[in-house]
Length: 249
Image (cartoon, rainbow, N blue to C red):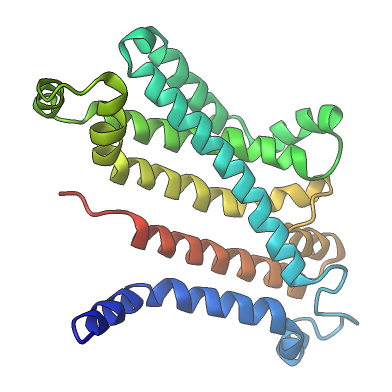
């Protein structure tokens, strides 16, 4: 028991940063009305300074849901495509996959929204499509770098042990490439947390709503609330990824 206690304490201390950011994020999301005097000092001429058209906790949950769905799809497509083009049968498609991923990030999310709305309608799905395309590049690029950076000697040793292609992928290649792949996922998710705010322009209910409403109505307090919560969410997720990413040997 005495050996386990220090281990648990060390693990808890390692997660102190993400937990602090999470606690601050939730405190502000649920306790924003208590900051009304501070916000009133920013917008003294405005009747309402605390965003109340939708609850901030609800907007935070919707923001996380949108980013989570888009990120899961991006991980599945990005890692899957990178794995396929690093196999002998799919090697010819490697330039095509890399170019498609690059095109997705260079294509402005606003343009994706404009093209997606006529097909998908207003709401959540257009921003999910935009985030999916925007988040593919770092995932594909890092997965390719991680898989192709594995020492050929390790591959030969795995073959010498009688491992088949699937066994080498799951037991050797992906574990060794995991730090690089996770770094790409971390970049993709963190960037998309900020980009998701654009969804409010097409009717998505997320933390971009106070920002857009504040811009339209000239209410700096609204803009500040949305921006601070998005920033804290990005810090929380990024610091959590920092703890999850295994160190490179």
